[in-house]
Amino acid sequence: MRGTLEKNLEVRASVNDVFRFLSDASNWTIWPADGKVPGIAAASGHLAKGAVIRFTTTDGAEHEHHVIELIPDRKISLHLRKVGPPISLFVQEITDNFEFEAIENGTRLNRRFEVRFRPNAIAEMLGRRLFVKQFDRAIETHHARLAEKFSR
Image 1 (spheres, rainbow, N blue to C red):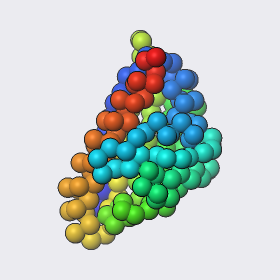
Image 2 (cartoon, rainbow, N blue to C red):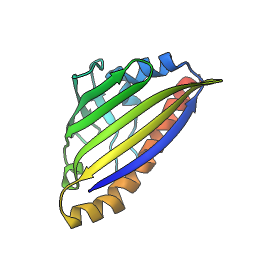
Image 3 (cartoon, helix red, strand yellow):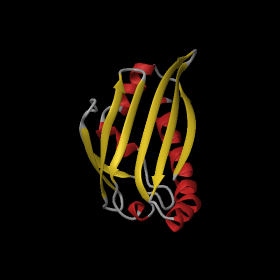
Image 4 (cartoon, rainbow, N blue to C red):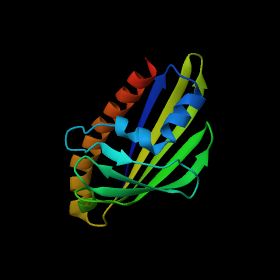
């Protein structure tokens, strides 16, 4: 069972600047906790296809993103395989896709967040009610922080 969130963001920066910022995992700490969704406390590494990026969230959980696709200035696809608690109670895996598009005054970032729930009805029901709603709000917060970073 899957759930999908799609969000778009326009920023006043070049595609290359936005891509370079997001492809450096140490910049991910720009994403704060939001409600029940923890922020990123620490992450390191530069993204490359096949790389594994380890990060710790503000609640102390450890996670791993596997870079499954990387096309410079066009696309980043991350697969969250090692999911720590409390997310792991509902979710088996997450794929986070970023697509970059040049627009007149900067960049449009198209983000698609795909969640595969644990294979039981209770996990899916709770995941859809709690997790997806919380992540929808968290992605909005992430985008606001990213827009703020590039508006300076």
